[in-house]
Image (cartoon, rainbow, N blue to C red; front, top):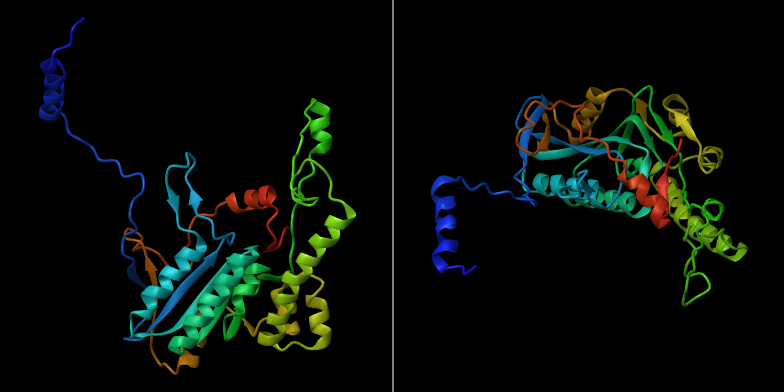
Length: 312
């Protein structure tokens, strides 16, 4: 069959004439954040910085993997950038509800928050929610004062690294994996064999290095007694009442108490607690936050990445 040029052009013209073209943007641009007042009044602003869920530098993705949402590190950096442009901002209130996450993500969040606070002379208060453990508590150390809800679980100071060993399972199903490597320990984190004693020693050295950084930061920021620090180094979690006795937190209370403390540190009689949110979330309140994601936990199992993480 011979196809003429008009036979191809004509259907195309019909489509343009009779159909509505729909543009599908698989990678939408981030829209400007909108300021929402959560409580209080006055000209001065205290910015709510939400640190919740698994802490990671990786972006979250949809079920089909087509779209993604910013990582917690990106979200916090974006809020800090917006706050830095507003001279009415006089302090930060961190709302922390996290069991922790990767070592690097927790450290970046601590660095970004404390650096911006020093630069702009903002007092920072952390309000700990249900869980502020391990990396979640690491981020709280960027605050000048820490308020824990009466039912908060916190602590778990230290490092954990996970490694799967599925060698037995593969043997049962008749699967054998061959690995070709340039060095004896190149496949240390592969789940196809157990670690050698030498590899276990090297992994433990890495964990000690990261945990030592965490311990030094606690000592520097919280000035705990020797006995309190000894309990903290066990890596256990503490209820708010015991965390208060140890010196990990400054008081127990609620969001309004943390907000009042920021105002006091900033020397403000009145201020608004504000959040910077994407358009369409105007009904948010002091407890609103993003949806949780399980991706970070899966990443730890597949990459062997060290984490400041509480695993209950």
